[in-house]
Length: 325
Image 1 (cartoon, rainbow, N blue to C red):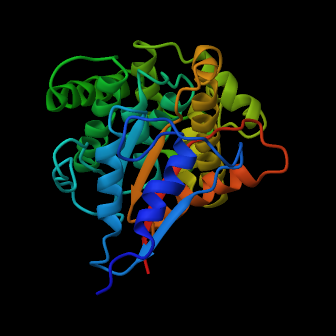
Image 2: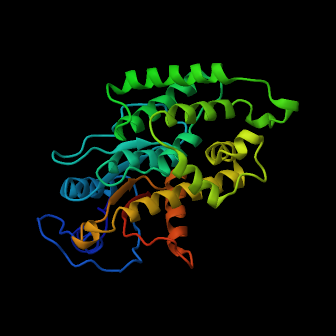
Image 3: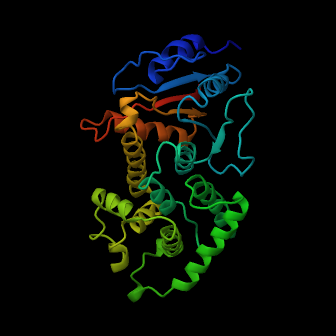
């Protein structure tokens, strides 16, 4: 099997021109492409070294810029070790993600708090990652993800498993304390399992950080008053974010677009002032196995935002992804 074609030009010329940092020496390089930064997509069969290129980039750029190394696994993959596989000493291991929301959770964990605290994106991620009431297995899996975010954002301290257990207990108690029959049967039958969880998750999150800025941001993008299910939800754009996401279809796609917009906006905001003056390097995202559904969706959302005629923000995030083909 031939090795990946043009590996050296990619890692020693193209990527340094995107990051502004040399590949294997502590030196700066001229950044090119302005604000129209391309996504680098490495395509090859099994055994051609696609993942090895990302491992090398992770090793050489570790601690030199904000870096996230994510391996996308097929949806429904059972939870395994947090890391996908070891890489040569000196670089971070790739962490697993099975869906778009989990990819974005991994990015937050990699970039917070040093780069940004994501006051808009993080509440959105909590709003969409609930579970169906009564499904203990789904609850435990989601709470493990919530625990990672809580720890990364400095909202909780302790061991991840214990934080997840305590969080699940708090949310379940909040659900029990606030469960009331829907007035006049107004609740959408498709939402009866997920909405109480979404509301409880947001109540508990709000005890740890303010959610007002996030509510205002999502409400500006999709005003909730017209189609909210009840008066309480009409005042809470984050509950509507969760409801729309769980309804699927075009509703979910719109929410995914919002989450990507929040991510890009908050990263771009972090590069004003001192960072821009000092020409600090922008983040590097290494996305392995991007031919999976979640990987394709992440890249499509990113490219859609960059291709918009009127881009609200202009960021210089470098993305290097691999694809089987």
